[in-house]
Image 1 (cartoon, helix red, strand yellow):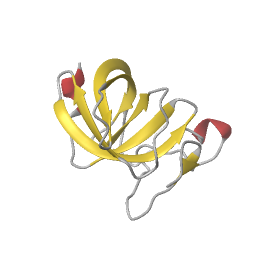
Image 2 (tube, helix red, strand yellow):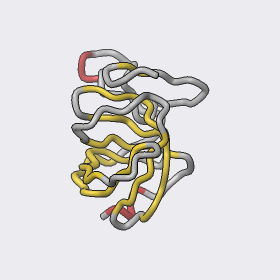
Image 3 (tube, helix red, strand yellow):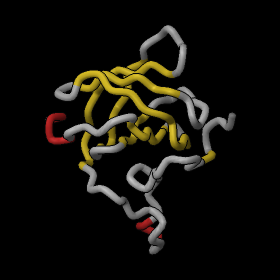
Image 4 (cartoon, rainbow, N blue to C red):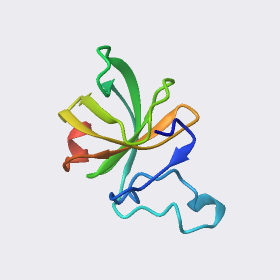
Length: 115
């Protein structure tokens, strides 16, 4: 599988978590779902790795989020997250670039609970 700096959609819609490109005048970075920009610290486990990593959640929507993590991950890797106010959830790495990654969640969450 591809490491960071590659994006794939596969069979999933990742509009809600794709890296921002709208600021450059393109419509490609427009989100399908509204997202909240925030700084939230949570816990993350990548794939079958035994260790848990502290991550910074930079934005959050019902279907996905962007985290900062200096460890690269394969696009398509499963991710387990524990977020304050939300609890445990899981998803798939949709993209990974320059210490950030987009996660397409397996289910929906209420981002307002992350306050």
